[in-house]
Image 1 (cartoon, rainbow, N blue to C red):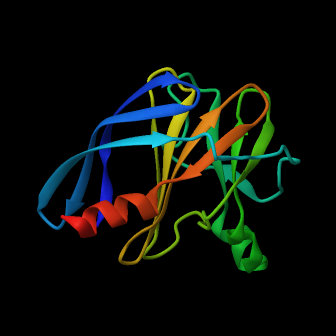
Image 2 (image 1 turned 90 degrees about the horizontal axis):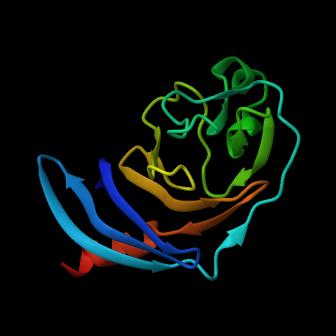
Image 3 (image 1 turned 120 degrees about the vertical axis):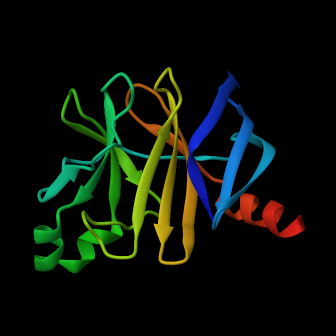
Length: 165
């Protein structure tokens, strides 16, 4: 089970995100369910230096081109396997890291793993899906401001809604 690449996001205010529709795929069929989130208890990431051996991962840039997700290259990971423990949200235009994304541990071209980012049109909110071999390891909402972002893990909630069906 993992999320598809189609989300319909609407931000009512900075404390609440409303998922009008969330598509969850399991093999060849889909389940549509609505989900409302309160991100008041989210964690705020702090800025760090742009790490050596990291690249902006393919298809993770925001619609306005400002932000993207940094992952270690395979070559950098082969020299230091601990690099996969940290992925970052970065301000691409200003070459500045906004902070570490919790519960995301991917390196470029990793086997049996995946990393997808789904952006809201205005580029101030995204969903980061960190896929493991058998489904999503984590699914987080990132609310981006000028110099940092707030992260809320929603994968556990989606899993419990799925299991309740």
